[in-house]
Amino acid sequence: MTDSWILAQTSLKFFTTQFLGLSWHSHYEEWRDLLEKYNRVLIQAPRGSRKSYFFSLTYPLWKIIRGKTDVLLVSDSEDQSRKNLRIIRDTVESNPFLEPLRPSTKELWGVDQAQFRNGTMINTMGFGTSKRGEHPLLILNDDIESERNKMSREDKNRMYWAVITGMAVNETQLITLGTPLEFGDILEQAEKRKQEYKWAKRSSREEVVFSLFTSCRPAKRKDANVEDYRQVGEDEDCRNQRASPS
Image (cartoon, one colour):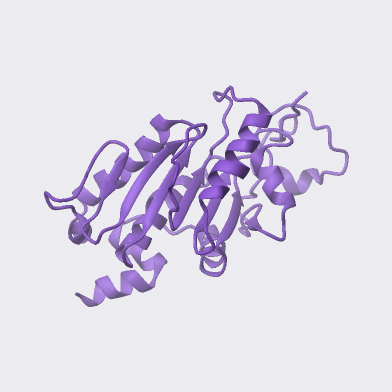
């Protein structure tokens, strides 16, 4: 085992920049600190914040090089979760630093499941389906709600709070991230459970303000601080606000 491999196992930043060749954005510092301290993490960030690269590619690969684990990738659709797995597979196959992770003929390397040489297993799941009997050590919920999903609010809530959280045991790290979609969505519900989740609404960066809101529909909340929630360069009449379900 080389010194660089040991350093990569120790430092998420080193792994990201030196092994994967990706940029380390300043708001990643905040996200890394949350991941190091807590098993229930909620991240709300706008599109363009590179959250999926950080959480659905970099972080699971970093966990894998540190030792055997079990990962579940959850997205709004099965196709999207499979795409996230394919990106991980392609990265492992093309990156010479990750050669020790490449499977032998004994390991499964499929469309919705991948087994690595150290025994780690990654499974995928679309929001609305289920993996009964699964208790992964890492569950990544990446933008599980979208405008394409036609499930009722009741079914979405049951899917998250009964099915997905029901798979998490005490040692499971359950990470939920996304861009707010509407009032009452899963992100807002989880935000209100502050005793269970540690969360980041936006980056501490000064050069880019991380908005909590994502659509250009008129706001219904009168207590919102517009200056806090407006993104840099955004039109004054389009303040990226959560859409009302009405």
